[in-house]
Image (cartoon, rainbow, N blue to C red; front, side, top):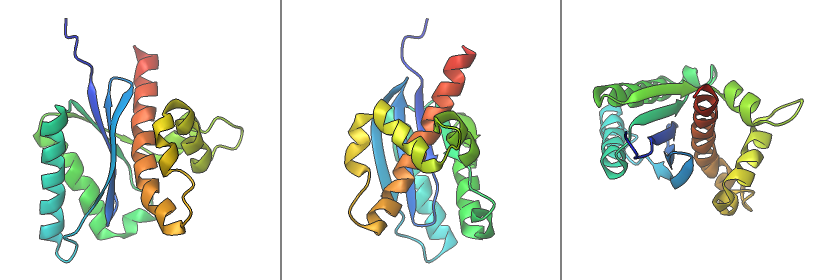
Length: 168
């Protein structure tokens, strides 16, 4: 019997940042926002993302990749759609289970109210993962926007875990 927990890498893609969350079983073991520096050319952008992914795959022995799917509005950006596709194909190339989680799933599973919102979903995460408190409700709008990627990644991973724990 395999006693090592399923290591899940959850990613919230963006054009400038990637939200990263790594779970070992249900435990949140790593969170980060990776800033993409090579944005001038698509080739440089994809090369940098590939480097980030490979480092994460190797550092954490990832078995599953959960990607927060981009919204209809975000699909207007050809770069962002390419980034999401690149993450997915990189995961498949590494023979990793890959799943997408939508914002609607995040709001429904974590929202905890009659009118679920992304903010309520993120607040639910704070109860489960108190170590995220320092990233929540920052004094500047840009900081909140920046850390929203981190919360989106954690939320995508939490939804995946919740859906798969109920199915077991």
